Amino acid sequence: MRTPAPGETDLLVPLHEGIFEQPMWQTFLARLRSASGADHAAIVLRSSAGEDEAEFGAGPVSLRLAGLFEDHPPEDAPAMRQMREGRVYALGEIVEAAGAERAGVLADAGLTDLRAVRVQEPGGLDGWLAIAGKRALGAAEGRLLALLVPHFRTALRTFAALERERVRASVSVDAFRRMNFGWITLDARCCVIDMDPQAERLLSRTTLLRKGHYGRLLPAAPEVDRELTALVRRMAEDPDARPRGLHLSRDPWIDMLVAPVRVRAMAGGGQPVAVAYLSGDRTSSADRCDQLAELFGLTGSEARLAWAMAQGLSIAEAAADVGLTVETARNYSKRIYAKTGARGQADLVRHILTSVLALA
Image (cartoon, rainbow, N blue to C red; front, side, top):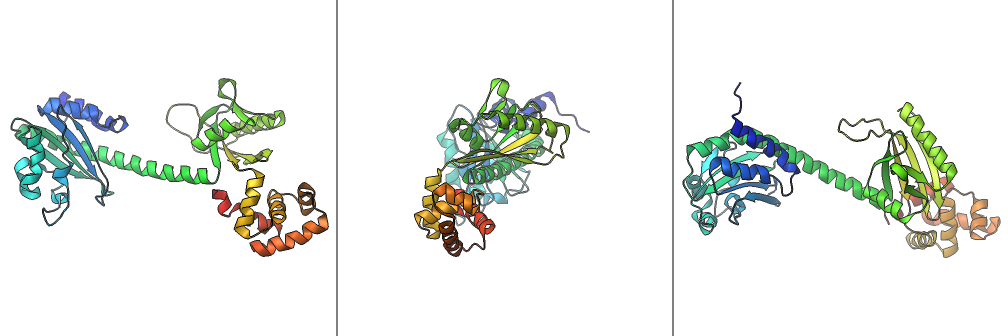
């Protein structure tokens, strides 16, 4: 097995760690310039569809190399994705494929030579690693790029995997935000380990829940605090404990589901034993009633009764809550069921809570 030379090792670590830099790969590109004696080093990335691209460069000159590896327009030059993957190309070969006019970007920067290699990630992401200089670049520089190819391919796969997870996380965060859900992870002492932006916003606008001393999650109601503490302690001892719901407020509606964390993180930091899912309606009952009236064609009184029933109140309780007699509430409920298509109160709750109002 071949052991990397010290100079190569100096490049490999920043190549793999470069995805965590801002801008990315700056240390690696600076060291690649130094190791190769080039005046400029760059990484160019392009999505499989060719619609998105990014370029990261290091050097004393302002230079954009992405144009050299551009596919379009196809009638002017063959697709640069036809560059054989993993093979180092000299400037003359690239000019022959891309057209002499594209090499003008080098001349404008006072550079005369270039070496580049293309690597493709299995998902279709293309990456080019390139060095350019004012002097001629030869076999030694090409060999250095060739030695970096398998490591560049691994770094590219890591980058692509992180990008996919970033997009998935963004979609999940947006869904949670639209449904007014947030989450807070807690350790065995009920101290907050992490939370999503939605939970942060909810904590910032309510006095019903806050972070206390040492980061402990504190409900304003003492009885809820005791129940939450007992729940988290139980889940620390038994990861298979059943989730439990806690009610914090009615107007606006805020409640919490506390569930055990069954996935253990191998990374550092506190170890969560429970996650508190928060559902906080950012809209008042009056606004919700207006939205219900518009969505289902209800009158104001019908909408207020429907919203009260959707909160789990019986018809008698909902009637008292909105100032109606029970008999009037029963008559209203029949009209509400007809307009919403519900077959009863349970079906009405489902219709309302799963309607587009959940996204409003």
